[in-house]
Image 1: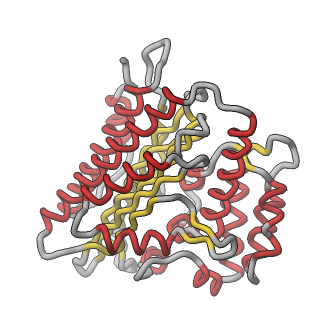
Image 2 (image 1 turned 120 degrees about the vertical axis):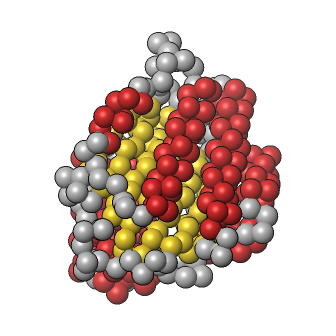
Image 3 (image 1 turned 30 degrees about the vertical axis):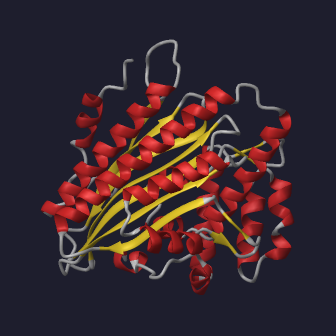
Length: 358
């Protein structure tokens, strides 16, 4: 297998400045390694006739690279992927005394397979460092099937338990709360891990946990992805309809509840396509519209803006133009209704990320 050349990425990275902190640089190396690990392992289970990677690298720059930026790998193989993005970014404000935030370094990935029996998976691992020297990890992973497989759910949950046995109980409880969708009386996904502001007095152990957690989740998910593709060779129209309904739910949760997505959009507009990379390719506009009556004010206005942004064509495609319009709709809603941020999902704590970026 011939992967996309990493010399290309190294050349492009020269445009982006790096954070000065030793810990931030170590965290950046960690998430870049996990990014390559994930892309490589996904490529190993995806059949390609030309030996090329199923993912293409795309770079974005924060303030023309002065304050960092990132590289995301975007899936181009439409046989296996509905939408998939494996993102790494590092932004920093070493030169700006007005910022409380020193740097934020993250791996954020979402895989939406084409096969409706292969579950979607979201994972986020990030290191945030403040100007006062405080730093903490954020670790998330959740399995999101359109058609649940009990064995896959059990395997993924067991993986999370084994990867972080001391942290699992708290993280699972926070995950169930964070990925709850009150308006619909259900969760996004079936197995959740959400560890916020994690930091102990054993710094190296924390770094090791982040690395081992990421690798364990990747290994487990690739196994689930591979098995589903080999087991369910001929999905029906009904199977794809279930997937489209679930993808509509996924978009709904991300755009109306996900605090990380909203925070990223409010900080700047220089990576809107990257932030919106988690959205599936096709959704059901009519289904989304049917949920308007379930929304509390002012979030009903947000959902209406989202619905109005989507095309009336069938199928309703979420292309790049639509993603940019959705990003703008979410940004404008919270600028006009800042108190609505309190209605978003949260775990036990709410990191003041948005304020720290201002």
